[in-house]
Image 1 (cartoon, rainbow, N blue to C red):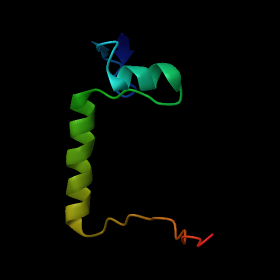
Image 2 (tube, helix red, strand yellow):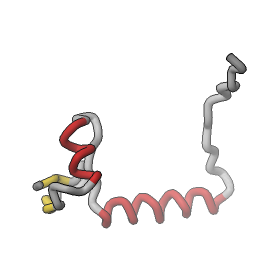
Image 3 (cartoon, rainbow, N blue to C red):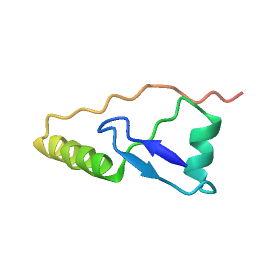
Length: 66
């Protein structure tokens, strides 16, 4: 299966039998990101976290007993 990175538009070939290929075929909202872009985003996010000014906003959903 040919896939294209959403950030750098690089074309890659992945095996048709992998769970990622199935997810991309069955759910069009999921997108593919190449490993280089994924690693670059990970490094920059870790650098922002290291500055101490990074805040991760999470929802305050409380678990309902019912």
